Image (cartoon, rainbow, N blue to C red; front, side):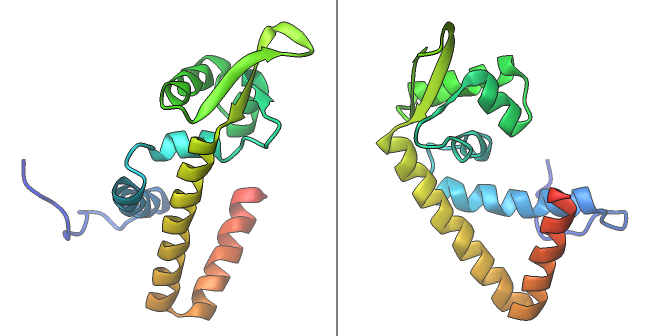
Length: 142
């Protein structure tokens, strides 16, 4: 297989392609500074408030199926990043809480993300990057 890093795509890059390229760079940086945590796992951890959520609430927050979210929770529990206990209000439900190890992984990942923000702002200019972030937030958050 040929290494394609540094090459341009055969078509005009569309937004999902560009976003994928950015995510690939982020994944590489996160692999260096928080290697035990995949970006998809980080996405789940970032939605956990200190008092936790049930798996169903967490799945709704991250827009996943409850079953898929449960798989992530089991992975994170195995890594010691979350703890799972019976919910107080319903013995059938499980409440997920982030652990100190999980908070540390999120902290380190956040440092990587901030460093990327700073590098990109430096590359394109602070004002252009600020506007880019505002527009992206408006599109993403409605």
